Image 1 (cartoon, protein in one colour):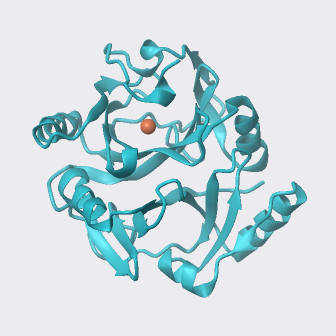
Image 2: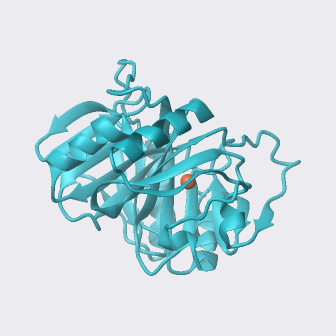
Image 3: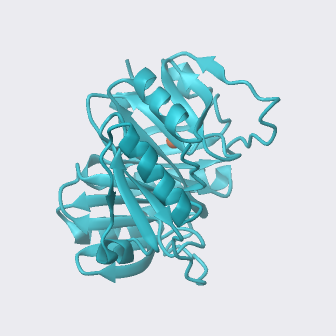
Amino acid sequence: MINMLDVTYVRMGTPDLAHARKFALEVLGLDVSDQVRDALCFKSDDRAHTLCYFKGDPADNTVGFEVADMAALEAAAVRLEGLGRPVRLATASEAEQRMARAVLMFEDANDNRLELVVRPAYDGRRYHGTRDAGITGFSHVGLHSRDPVRDERFWTDVTNARVSDRIGDAPLLRIDEVHHSIALFPSARRGVQHVNHQVQSSDDIMRSWALLKEKRVPIVFGPGRHPTSSARFLYFEGPDGMVFEYSSGVRSIADELAYREKQFPFEPKGFCQWGAKPVIAEFRN
Ligand SMILES: [Fe+2]
């Protein structure tokens, strides 16, 4: 069992680093953490970085998950290789770029690129956004899945991910008390489908909604409220067509034994209880 402690970072290629920087600072509201060669890293909470854009292909993206220590990393490598999944230990320079002690790279059943991370850096500097977006931290990712049933099995068999709820066959998976850190959405593609940051309150969501409309950022879903996690949300489009989400009030599942997952329909009401309709391909039939 690969015991993932937290979702640590997203790394994404972009042909236009200057545009990605402008978006991350002026729209999303992150802080520059570091610029290492052709990579620009951003901070959204106490960690040294949680989002990194590098010069490259937008289809080239990866998600990092923290594991406890080197022993956990080595055990994960053995488990994944036993399943016939190739693994690769990051070079010293790759680990340095990721601000971590060690990183193991692999792909899930959908060929989504993933990384297990030992000792991701905290930099002791308080996050304060370049604008007041109210961000409290990087919180979850949506992943593309050509076969959500198969991929749910991969995540729940191989890692500590548990199903919190399903929308159709799309599982929302938790690795700690947060309702979901990973969500798998039906798609013909691979990789990261959306990137979520939590914000402090519904006021932050509504303030950002007004600001994003003014800046002509495409709003692709919301404002709304998820019936699954109970979070209020707003989805919008970032560089290279990537979907970003702010949400607030995500459910916490403290009592594992008392909780049972629920089934929601794969239609707009399964995604939003306020009646908002998504214009996100993976959220539509
Ligand atoms: Fe989300």
